[in-house]
Image (cartoon, rainbow, N blue to C red; front, top):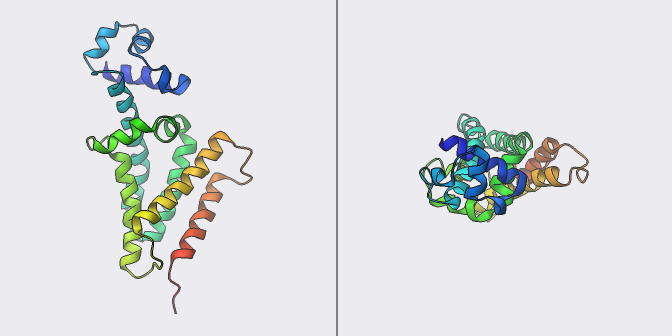
Length: 194
């Protein structure tokens, strides 16, 4: 029943936005009374949070394993950039839910359980790649590893967001743009051998 409720809620949010999500509307969609929903979720916000948590878990399942299996941090960053863009373009509704629709639900997840914090885990894999580059003396500059990860994440988010909302604005494929972006940012940060 919980999955049925979440799927109906997700469809409502994708179709009409978080503002349209209500216990009554979900109950109508699954043809149960609103009271039934309260047996599984405390309120509408708990359902919205669960929708975002599931989206972040899907996102992390695509990014984290590929990154964890690669020892070279530069290659790991390339994999992450391509996986990030591929996820956003392959799962546009989920991407919009977790990154573009309602920040209060996404930000609440940083206080949740492991599944709810899956997006945070993916982000800190990215931070870890920069930390490894710095530890091996391959980075220069005074930005922190966290700042570098935020900069790359924000840039990738911009590519996916533009591709989803203004597809005619970008003349090249999102994958090509992500690759060029990563190389431009990394080559500006990496130490050149002397």
